[in-house]
Amino acid sequence: MAGDGREVLGMRHLLLLLILLVFTLPSTAQAIIDDLHISRDGDIVNIRVSVRNTGNATQAGPMLIEVFARQTSSDDWQPVISWSNIPKLASGHRVSRDYFSQDEDQVTAMAARGLFEVRAILSGQGLSEVTEKVADYDPDHHH
Image 1: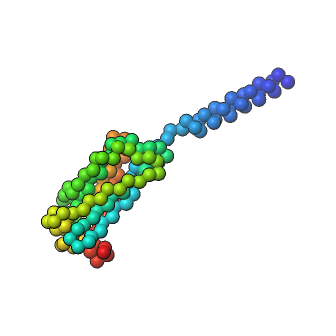
Image 2: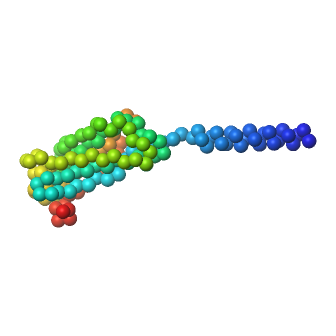
Image 3: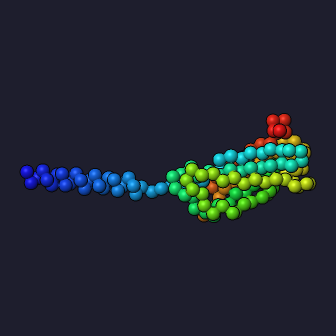
């Protein structure tokens, strides 16, 4: 019967070890560009970039969002704005940044000519990878 006690004790240690492993598995943070939305009201163009942390841990910062625009796919990307004021992002949370074009800036001029493209890039020291999203602005489908 002494062997039975050791087996029970061994099973308890194994169970405790399994529980510890489950609770000490690495947590991951994964901030991504969740949405890139372009809208226009008169001459004002709004570019909204939304970042979401799809991981199960807080995403460390700082994070940088850079926004670029171009008229056509054969044109070079032109810098529009960048935001570096995102220190961290909790698991499951989202943060958005909005750019509103000014009179006679490049985005307003592109919108006046019709179709154009916007690209947003998310990077930062705490990110496991750089992510980006591209969206087209079509005046016939945006109001």
